Amino acid sequence: MASELDRFDRKILDVVAIEGRISVTELARRIGLSKSPTQARLKRLEDSGVIRGYRALFDPIRLGRDHVAFVEIKLTDTREAALAEFNAAVLKIPEVEQCHLIAGQFDYLLKVRTSGMAGYRLVLAEKISMLPYLAHTSTYVAMQAVKDEGLGAAASNDGAI
Image (cartoon, rainbow, N blue to C red; front, side, top):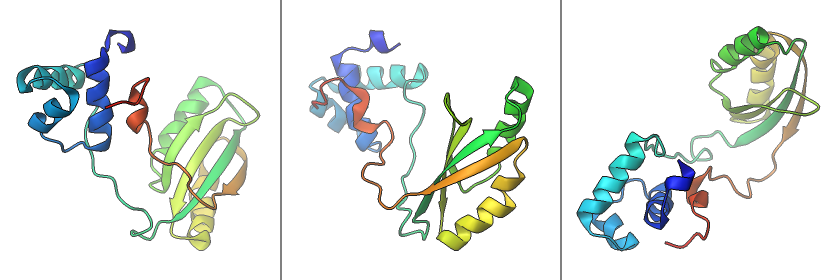
């Protein structure tokens, strides 16, 4: 699908990645098309799954969840059944913000967000340590988020709006 996106589609993605609640009229003005073709393009991007949805972004600091830890996970078994069981279990831990299967020296990398070190220690002891097939973990605490935006404005090649 990426090869089928033209410059107007990429401009739409750039704008809605930052302003998901923008009106179609304003979006059309920004990308240089009239309202009807802009609306049709937006619907096509949604229907095709390029745009998966819209959501509110919360400030984790204002919510008291400013402690971020990255956790390397090494498993005792990496066969498909073990991975599926691990995946299902980790999805049930709300403090795990991201979970990635990794090709490298360890098997998974988790991003865990809590209210502080005490909260993280509890999540590690009571939830992460109970995950199936867990051999060992290594934790790295983030001191500062320099960039934490997801895909966002990286949708286009030139970044121009």
